[in-house]
Amino acid sequence: MIAKIRTENRKTLAEIIDRIGMIDGVTRTETAIVLKCVKEETRLKI
Image 1 (cartoon, rainbow, N blue to C red):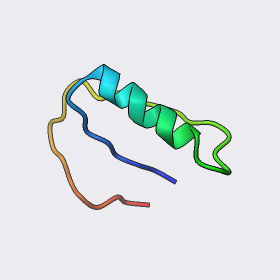
Image 2 (image 1 turned 30 degrees about the vertical axis):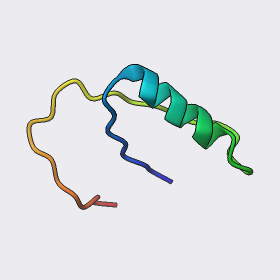
Image 3 (image 1 turned 180 degrees about the vertical axis):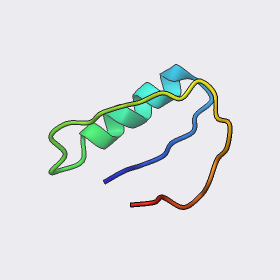
């Protein structure tokens, strides 16, 4: 699963990641932080 999350700050991001980690069946998460976005699209090309 891929989730795109936009938060106000790193503290809020950490709280969301912790909540995701508490979901049954979630064994790990990976996080990437984007510092600058040139073009944003709503559709993912999979």
